[in-house]
Amino acid sequence: MTPTGNKQKRVLLVMSSVDEMGLSGKQTGTWFHELAAPYYILTEAGYEVVFASPEGGEAPIDLLSLKVPFTTEYTDRFLKDPVALFAAKHTRKLRNIDVETYDAVFFPGGYGLLWDLASDSFAIKLIRDFHAANRPIAMVCHAPAILRDVKKANGEYLVKGVSLTGFKNDEDTEIELLHHLLFSLEDELKGRGAKYVSKANWEANVIVDGPLMTGQSPASAAPLAQALAERLKA
Image 1: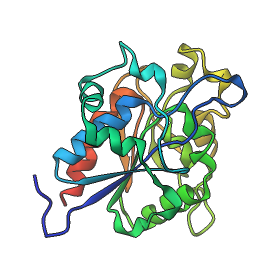
Image 2 (image 1 turned 90 degrees about the vertical axis):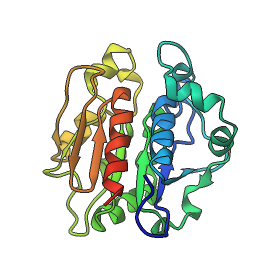
Image 3 (image 1 turned 30 degrees about the vertical axis):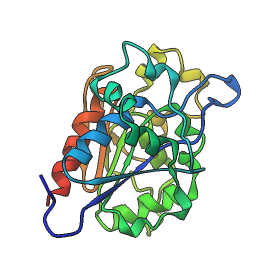
Image 4 (image 1 turned 60 degrees about the vertical axis):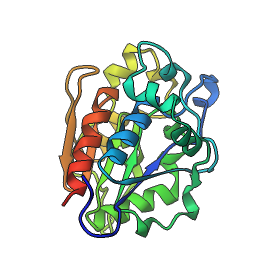
């Protein structure tokens, strides 16, 4: 469906520029399905999707997410789509973007963002400003970790008293990666006063509280993108 009015609504999709998990040397990046699913769901709903990353240029994809059983119809399609591939290899530098020209922001997950976006002052300010303006902020899997240090104008943590979700400690533990992480998303957000809501490991789970829209794990990427597409129709 085409958005109302002449101006096509725009979604900024922000990827990590980091391809290693700290000193462990384990390869990481953006989880492919969490990039591909929102790209197609949002573009087919009539919105423009623009890729950005802290460093700009080619943003790394987690190699594991390119392999079966983690591939999906969306990732298969993306790999055969020259326009999508070009966009992912030529992301815009986040700091150079006029975020006021965007109607929403979508942060896909993947472990890389724990090392860059979670402490990126531009990303933190973007989230604070979007939240204050009631513009949707969609975050899936590990992306809600970026909320850790976001504060409102009154100095309170943005997540205090807010219902949200994100990748569980149990899910990190199941894939034997919790001990490699810079910090635990679940622990940090609970410590900031968030009402953390989870379902069974790997189950789709989308929580919406005001402008903040969060998804628990990769299975949540498509329903989260669909929820954002619906919200942008208004």
